[in-house]
Amino acid sequence: MAKLVSKVYGEALFEAAIEAGTVDSLMEEVDAVLAIFRANEEYIKLLNHPKIPVEEKVALLEEAFKGKASNQLVGLLTATVEKFAEIENILAYFESKVLEYKKIGIAHVTSASALTDQQKEEVQKRLLETTSYESIQTEYQVDASLIGGIVIQIGDRV
Image (cartoon, rainbow, N blue to C red; front, side, top):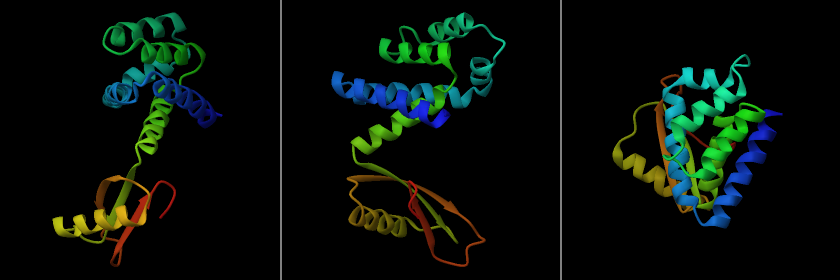
């Protein structure tokens, strides 16, 4: 159910941004809000707490973001806490839609040992050649339990 709610509201935010021509600016706002939420886990717990009245949650959001974020984003944040608390998932879904729209892929690369800069460039080049993305954001990790080689995950593809 939570995934469906995130998809519906995230999709609505994305479509509204496309229609208004504010995809880039809204993406920056969403990134900033998500960074705030991720850095302040207690704030999210507070917004999700069932015993805190909805009016207080809305007041907290408006105090934190009104005038600093677009009315569109503040409206979404307040609407979500009024109905349910899936703010982070909705914003994360919106981010994924924007990246998809801009043809930006996110690749998670795990290797048995640290890759050199040249190897990273080769991986990046190969990923761009073999996918339909125009650019790739790559996150590298080392997993010593791998016997050798690399594992690349983009979305649900490995």
